[in-house]
Structures are given as C-alpha cells and as structure tokens.
Amino acid sequence: MATVAHCLYCFETLAAHLDNREGLTLKEVETLYKEYLQESEDASSSGNKAESLEKRIPALQRVVGSNSSESSSSSTPASGSTMSLATETAATSTDSLPDAETEVITESPLFVTWNTVSPRTGHTSLRGCIGTFESQELGEGLASYAITSAIQDMRFDPISKRELPSLEVAVTLLTNFEDCDDPMDWEIGTHGLRISFTDRGRRYGATYLPDVALEQGWTKEETLVSLMRKAGWTGRKDKWQSVDLKVVRYQGKKKSLQYPEYKRWRDWVDARNEDEA
Image 1 (tube, one colour):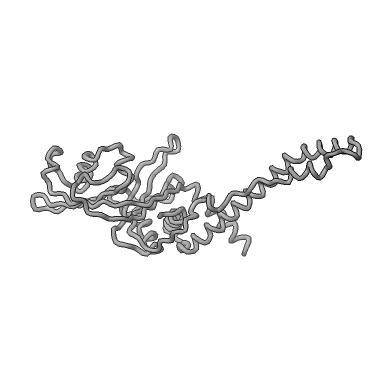
Image 2: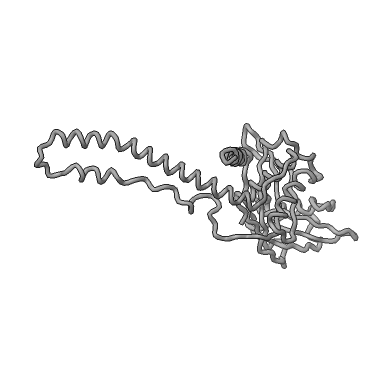
C-alpha cells in the first residue's frame, strides 16, 4: 500500500522542483523516515521514563519516610516496597507507528493528488490529480506524477511555491483490476472506476479513484453519470443507460499527508545534516 514515505517523497520532489534544487531519492526518504521514527520513538520512551520517575519520587519519599520511622523488625522491608516502583511504562512499539507494514511494493499503477486545506475549517479542495494505469517503478513514477499533477493538470493553474504550506498530498497505488459485466457491479468506498465508451462516433474515457464517490455522497448512478460527464459526454442524464459502457473496477491503497508533517520531517533532516557537517 501507499506509505507516509511515499507522500514525503512527493512533497520533497515538488519542493525541490520549486526551489530549483536537487531533491532526495525515494530510497533516501524511506531510510531517513525510518530513522526519524526511531528517534521519535526513543524520545517518547525517554519521556515516559522521566514521567514515570517523577511519579515515583513522591511514593519513594513516602516509603523512605515510613521505613525510617518503623522498627527494624518491620515485616515489610524497604526493598519489597520499591520493587513495585521499578515497573516502567513500555515504550511505543514500532508496530504501532506509521508504515510498519511488511509488504514492500516497488512497482504499481499510481495516482498523485494535491489538495488545498482550508486553515479555518480543515476542508480540502482538489488542486490537481494525475496518474497512470501503467505500472511504474515507484521512485520514477511518484517523482514524475508529483510534478505532473501539480503543474500540468489543465483544470488548474500550476501550483506555486507560496501554496506549499496549504497543501495536502495523497498517493494511491492501484490494485485488483477487474472487468465488470454490469456497470453497477462495484462497491462505493471500495472500488475506483475506469470507464470507456463510444457515442456518436466519438470515444470517451475517464476514471474516479475509490474515495471519490464516498466523499461526494453519490449513489452508483450519480457516480457513473458524473464520470461520463468528466469524460466529456453531453448526452441527457436519463439516457446514460443507453450507452454501452465498459467498466473496469479497481481498488486503491491510499495514504495522505499535509505539509506541516512534511515540514517537521524536513526540518529534522536539515538539522541532522548540520550536525553531521
């Protein structure tokens, strides 16, 4: 499935393009992100230990005070009381951290989506989305479509550098392509759709990713009609069933990330590089 590292890589590629600098490779991003997670885990573990120690000190003081006032024949030795204080809160397991998946994907059909995030409501608005149904080596494919979807989606103006802080990126890796005998043979929220058809001598085609129908609150029929409109079809809405639709359903493994998360990671990378210089 798509990972946080894939999203970081898309942001890194776009930011580097807009800054006219050389960006990190996907392999470098993945390696650095693992180190970033490990360092965050270590810091969290240290914080838990410090917090645990702070909680223990008053109890330890009570134990010491109690023992100093008791006779030497006390049936509860001090060591017996402090043993229960030695139990530490377990550190967060790497299994619970993002991208701890064991599955490794090196090639896949993919789409890169850029959204604008409202600072007031958190609502997202589409800013660009382009991808391919041809399997891509992820390092090359993600870099290519991160730029293409940001600056070559003809529905929008190219994304500018000043827009970066307001952006969210979503990476979707496509899987499980299946021909549908019936245009309705798919599930909202599970399947994306790729349609193709010919009407009045003209060929049409378009796709919606798996999350589109669910996010828009559409029925299956509304989704299909909207997708036909996206392809450029201008026929009557109530006549859509007269068109011989070829429908392919597929699934998508999606991950999304907003700019502040990329910025925190990138600042960590820069600080790390300065320390090593």
